[in-house]
Length: 197
Image (tube, rainbow, N blue to C red; front, side):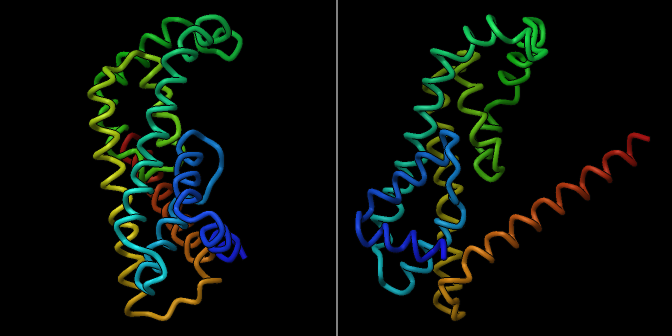
């Protein structure tokens, strides 16, 4: 059902809808980004969409979404946190500690956080809020978007060419893959707790 709706939107509005799905997914408005990228790969393999256009529009949507979220974090994040953070348990010292951690490890969150739902939405706001250097952020988010988009689309293209995948089953496949990802995270967390105890 979801894929039928997405495909109908793509047929009606063209590549603009792909840009908007990726853009809104990054800035935090729920959108099925991974499922969409996989679905685009399948459509490209069936020669219903052009690979170059899909890639460029997806990359632009994700990258501009990151820059927009960075800007929102830059202009609204720190002032709001300083004014209202104490009401949600985030005092100035906690913010400064998070600032230091993000400056130390933030580049990895920006670069590889695309693969982690939630992290890819939070990292640009955090980067803007702590005044992470914009040029570095833009470079890392551009590369990160590339490293995220291309593999997922290629998997969709490969499976679309070699395995008959009914379009209606793509959301189910996406849910299964996401569930497996959560299971892996859960097992890893248990393993880390056992190592600490």
